[in-house]
Image 1: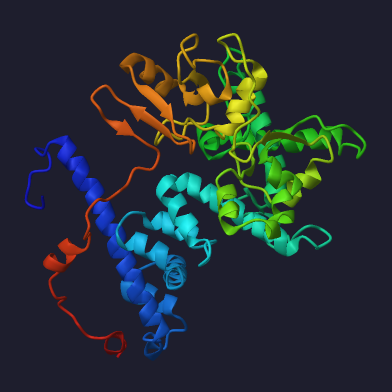
Image 2: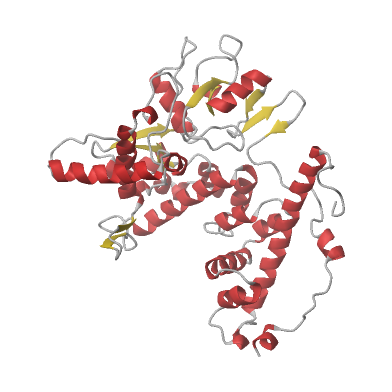
Length: 441
């Protein structure tokens, strides 16, 4: 297709070619990282006088130093993870997914993580990896008096020469949730048209990435100023005063009470892997939290937790009416993580609850198993175009179009048994074959 007029290529063929090249690029990246690992292991970079292989990679391949360190980390990790490496080499998972799972995978758990990478979207995989990292960190720091280190948090400010004020804050998840909640409430109060609605639609009330982008920059500044002015006017609240706000946290019951850690010695390795998929411990619409933080926060009124079972589902709340109750809506919102579940969609505002099986028909009950969260765009699209939705036992959603097209959250990116074939046959010899030592000289 190199010599074809891409504007004349049929769209189905163009889509196949795009996905095929995604698989080829993944396979090529795996091969490239394997070469980097060998070059690093043999210290091929040392003759250049550069301090590390990452510095050599940045210099020789024209890559940013931070990205070079990350490439090198992944390359080293893949040497101890043969199953993930083999899946990556076949072009079945992307570099973004490999970069995520190599942060937590071990030789004992790599098969499970490779399966999760093939099943999940990159966004969902990042969430699982983040939670697993915090659970492991909890285990290492569980005996510390304050429940973990906070050396990385900081807050600084100064006046610039032009008279503007500069403020920088880097917070942990717990304090970040409080600040984000305050900013979201302040921004909403400045413009009531973006506040909560009572028409049966669900909108996030947390400051996540998507919501932050929808708030104009000037309003965010006014919100921060308003919070400061309110504190100056009313002072600090007393320690015994009840909290006037709530931070919502979604957490499965095992994570909250710590049962998984207590039962670790009594289970087989396969049972432990089955538990991974249903684990959740995160601020509504925000970052993941360490389980110890949630257990501590649950002692006061700051926290409202939505509990789920080991499969990520809330308690079944059978209903004889079509419209779900407020409690049921919140349960569905918690299970679906406040995101439209249509494959590829990331909308987090003005979400609606949809019946997979029409209410009143066989299996069309108003229960969590038959309900799903959709944005208004895709809810309307499903009804207007007659799309059919089906949820697999794993929780993955399939969308069936009238023309036979089937959409899923993480479709395979390549079916080529030899994705590097095109590179082997087409790659010409480079014009400059000198070593980096020669380049440096």
